[in-house]
Length: 238
Ligand code: BV8
Image (cartoon, rainbow, N blue to C red; front, side, top):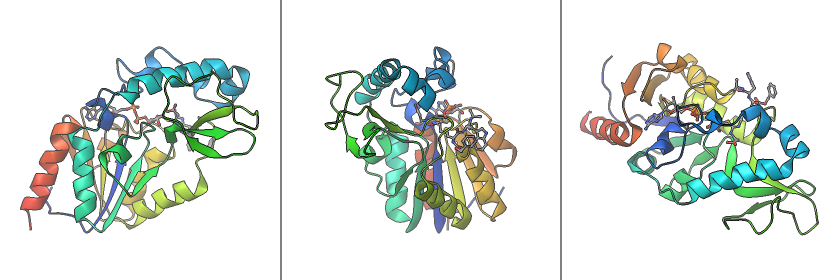
């Protein structure tokens, strides 16, 4: 496949793998978060309504893990790409907040953000970085339960967020897919949508995924190593 320089329009889709080199556990790997839990038992509204304390204990455990993690070279490379490419959109499935911490501005957080909470009554969203939370489950001043401001399985993604992702996928020249197993929908369909609209699909992962079957280029390796290398290669080409 012919190598190419810096794309005019770049959409990036990231998954848990981009944060793996920062120490954030992925979901489906051998040490993944799901290995000891069943997502349907925890990452669903039904589970939360049934046992909000249990679900919050899982999120508090994850917030504790993620809280000490810092962005890695892969996150920082995406910040450089954003500064150099006017038509740039970063779409992430991650809820860890590391892209914003690295300095990315144009970020579409498809599945929400683990550092935000939402009132179950008023719908208001507040940032809560205090860890541990003073009470589990936390409550709003209005007395209602607060939930993590993330999208659970069986919940629709916020329409404006999803539309921004679809718009980016349909208009980009290149879609760069980094560190996702390509399992969770509708995010997993974005690279195929981009491909269908004429974009090149470039994948970075430590292993092949369902996306590899139609990607124009699959780079096997750690994102924190391969993404800086790719950026250097793009900059060196006309
Ligand atoms: C919805 C937030 C409408 C919570 C998460 C078809 C269409 C639409 C929906 C569905 C459909 N089929 C099924 C569904 C339902 C469901 C779904 O997709 N189920 C799957 C499991 C089959 N989807 C939904 O419910 C979505 N809602 O579509 O609404 C609707 C509703 C009902 C019915 C139909 C339609 C909502 C999905 C959002 C769920 N919320 N997170 C939380 O985090 O607690 S998903 C969760 O998985 C995370 O957000 C995570 O990001 C995401 C995806 O996982 P990955 O990021 O890919 O992580 P994973 O561990 O799997 O893979 C890591 C990859 O990195 C691996 O490939 C590995 O090789 C690689 N890697 C590891 N280390 C490195 C690396 N790569 C590079 N470098 C490294 N160092």
